[in-house]
Length: 133
Image (cartoon, rainbow, N blue to C red; front, side):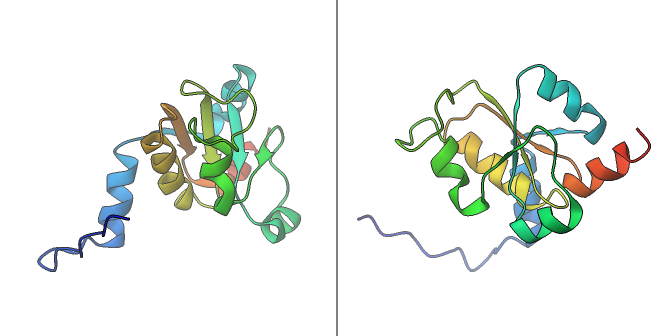
């Protein structure tokens, strides 16, 4: 197994830099556009934990995949991926507030899921945007 070089001590990226780097590689979907994405065949994946889903509500049409299984269930090269998932499948990752979903979508892109995106602001922004609808 190859060893991983230690981080460069002259520059350790901040969490904000790390998040910005991830977001630079993905598309972010606005909450008001999520229904259109679902209608055109996107797979929306809710990675929130069960307590948050129970307390705050379900995301209609979303597939629930816990964060720790996401890459194994969606990466095109994974032998455990969901049936029908391939490199050009549109996947939109959703978390509570749109932070961990950005990292997750960037990881999926790195693993070959070319159209992985995340929901800007997460479930809470979607709920706020659709509250009057």
